[in-house]
Image 1 (cartoon, rainbow, N blue to C red):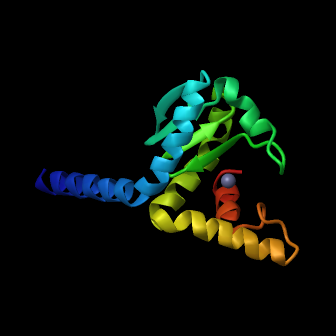
Image 2 (cartoon, rainbow, N blue to C red):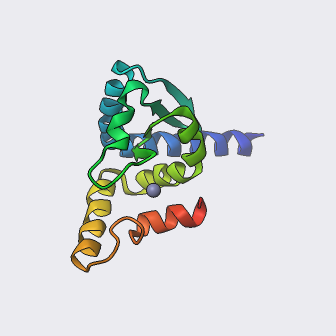
Image 3 (cartoon, helix red, strand yellow):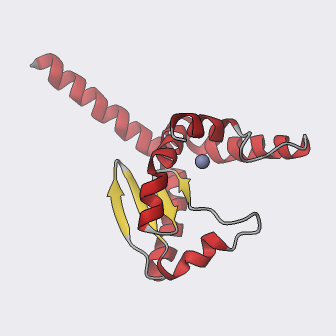
Length: 140
Ligand SMILES: [Zn+2]
């Protein structure tokens, strides 16, 4: 019993540290979430991540210069076109949540840095990005 309580306490501390380490990214994601809420979107907490659907802001996702995206993860926040698409890509986006928990404030510079290097090499900055390779391997 004491071992269970100690293990549970440690896991709570570790989770709190991951949330704190990821919080600069999550704050950025929350700004996006507030915009989506203002456009009629919805929010819900799923598996430790706050998910926002776009509402009337769906055009933000469908009219991007490099093509439409179903969702994007920023820290513990996942922004997506619709509830249905969020459900469909949830496993993939939660791999990114775990990557943010490992990399913290370094995740966005590391992700974009890899993409830039790949782009300079004439390769696919999305599909060949190691963060995406891991996410597609764990959740195709
Ligand atoms: Zn991804």
